[in-house]
Image 1: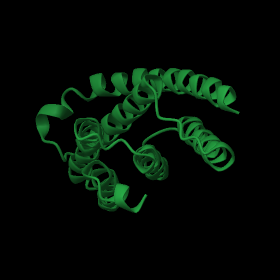
Image 2 (image 1 turned 120 degrees about the horizontal axis):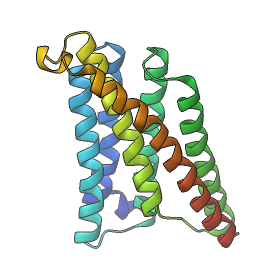
Image 3 (image 1 turned 180 degrees about the vertical axis):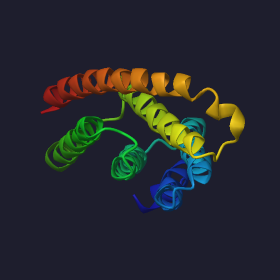
Length: 190
């Protein structure tokens, strides 16, 4: 396990926690431009860790834990900050955090009782991507509203706001589908 920590893919996953801390600082400082840049870096690092894990044959139990944990931490921290800043609705936060908490608890249970680590599946990845896109656009729209992204985007803010509403509901649908899929896999492994 100690050796696995130093796999390039796992170091990239671990770096997401550092990037998240800096992104949270900028979000709390209401510097939405820098927050968007850092969230894009978090997303790119999420793609890179999976790429390197497959390319270098570094798929490990540690990676199967730290990668989704970094995803969940990123989503939870960002939704809570956006809730505090009144950028996203409470119901979205409750559903999103509940999904991640249930998956985390189920994963810890399977790991402790059966020594099984469930890898994320495509439904989970699509759900995280949809949630991430919703959060990114919400931050972008707030930054646009207060003039951090220049005049061009402020003229098209209504389109962005409509897209955010659509993505909120699409995210909820993906959250429910991924949760059902995870529950099915959880029950098959009990």
